[in-house]
Structures are given as structure tokens and as C-alpha cells.
Length: 360
Image 1: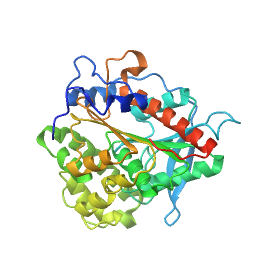
Image 2 (image 1 turned 45 degrees about the vertical axis):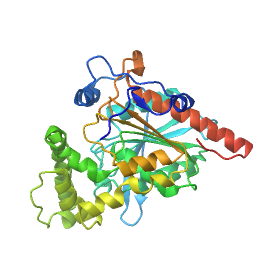
Image 3 (image 1 turned 60 degrees about the horizontal axis):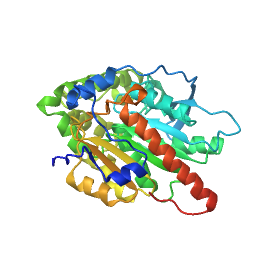
């Protein structure tokens, strides 16, 4: 991995200012990626005061799979023309994850409609689908976008994804390409774009604690699914699983239609379609993220796409970004994602008003 230049953020300063972003400086004593990651997972955020409405959305009529969404809508009559932000969590997270509720509160306070989407099974919803969840289910996100856009006549929708959720929203944006309306912007924090690289990084000795954490929860979920749907999961013999790659090879590939883990990683990775993204897109990643890795080929595709702003920082850990800023801005990524979305969603609204196109 090539080190970043000394100016901390690898992006043209003019681009950053145009995007409404502020420089990142890690909080004192937290310049280590592991410390950022662990402390960031537990540092309290302001109380979440929204009165969310829960709703299930059917994402696959073939098997009746549904996902649970928690919605906070601005009052009528302005609801439809307000920006709607749909948030997608990371692996084994949920709509209740601290970072999801943190950015949800910011977006709501900024005047946005907010939808906190659970991936299949997440947030205690195992009974809503007979399937497992995985990194290739970008159509689920698209179904949620179209469901709410159609129901409320939403003019502008933005997607925010963290880690695995970042891969999902980037994959959807690439698949939709120039036919993305009403999707007007995407922002991701530490997206797991290259699945194989990230899976192998989790198995490195320094990262085994994270891998064990994920594996323990994934295997608990698999056992719950087997109890709920024994006719699907109760008969197959599963070999011992000692790594995320083995889980994906023995369980995800078997039950989700992939040949093996390598086939899954290739077909589900947003890296294959990021060159087709045609709306303003922010990608934030830290060089010291313990396990999210970009291959040189993927990074080149990101930089070559004029619709994507890739912001790479020397520090920040995995989805943490605890900064020296005071008050709520200590959560740098959350604050800057909202700034970015507000800026580019306003540009999208103006472009639609005057009939012009939209580009970064």
C-alpha cells in the first residue's frame, strides 16, 4: 500500500472546498487505526430524539423477503421536495448502530427525511426472510428507494453506506448508471469495495479479534436461521468455520447461489461497476483502516471517474473518524457526509428546476 502524502487528505484542496468538506485531524491520542476503530464504536453520541415509524418493505416477491426500515419524515407539504437520506449499515450492524443513529440525527436536524434500512435479517428481523444476507443484495436497496419515492413522490434521494453497506450503495449506483433518478447522490464511509481483499485482511494476525467478533455473530445468526427454517438450513453438514472466507465459502456461497467464496467476492463487489457511477459520489477511507483494502486497479477506476470524489486520510480507523473538532463535529465523517449530500442534492434540485444536467 502506497503511503499518502503529508497533507493528510489525498484529494485536491479545491475539490474538498467545492464539496463542502473540512480537513481531518485525529483526536489527540487516537492516531492509531485500531484505537480509532474501537473507541469510535463506543464513544457516546447525542441522544437520538426522532420518533421513527417502523415499516417493512418487501424486497423479493418470489420468496416474500422483507426488510425493516425506520423512517423519520419531515412534515407535509414539504416532505416530497426535501432530500431523503437512506442509510445502510455495515456487516452485523443494524438501524440501531451508533453511527447510523448518529448520522440520522444530523440529517434530520438539517431538514432531511431519513430512512434507516436494515439489511435482511439484521436488527432482529430473521423471521422476515427465509434467506441469508450478503454483499451482493444491492437490488434490496434499490427496491427501498423506489418504494418510498413512489409512495411519497420524493424528488431527491441520497444513499449513505458504511463498510458492507457502502459496497451495496456503490454497487447499486453503478448498476443504475445514468438512469438513477430520483437518486441524486451517494456517500460512503470505509466501503468494502474489494471483498476478497477485505476478507483476507480480516484473517491477518493483527485483525483476528475483529474476524472472531464477526464470525461469532454470523454463526449465531446462521443457527437462528436453521432453527426458523430447518427445511432450508437444517440438513446440510457445515464444516468447521475458522475464517470469514470459510464462512463465505461454506455458507454464503452454498445458500445464496454462488459457486464458492471467490465467485461471491467477484460478483458481489462494487469494484466491478464503480466506473459506471454517474451521480455525485463521495468515498471516504482511511489508510489505517485495519481491514478495508482497495486494490490498485479499483483505486484507479475510482480516480478516473469524474463523478467520484475519493477522500483518503492517513488516520481514521474503520468507520470511526474521531477528530479534534469540538462538539458534535468530533464525528468527522458523519458531519462531512451530511455537508456533502446537502450541497450536491441542492445542485440536483437546481438542475431539475432549470432543465440542465448535473455533474460533480
